[in-house]
Image (cartoon, rainbow, N blue to C red; front, side):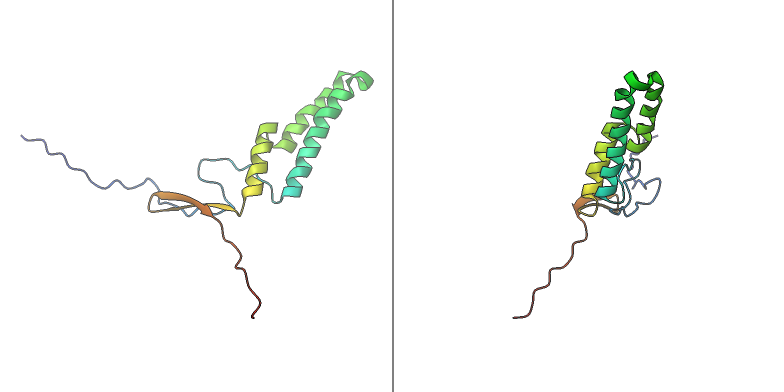
Length: 119
């Protein structure tokens, strides 16, 4: 018996999906906010909770340290997660990942057409 090597086309487990600027790539986390000011406000709240809980220990005792874990909610994880979310929020709408036929590309998102006045 002669073994025959054949190579067939491998189909992906699931069909490729069009990724938009408003949804993260499959398998990645999205730490972005709806707007940059909202994201900065979340960061200010998180940083305020951390600084406040440590600064108030001499005044109110170690019970104030219980406010520090609330910062994790504001940061959606750790401060690094907040920084990643800031980068995602800023780049949202500027960079867009598109996947078609198993090939993904990274390019500019939809841009507004510039209109010139006639003349």
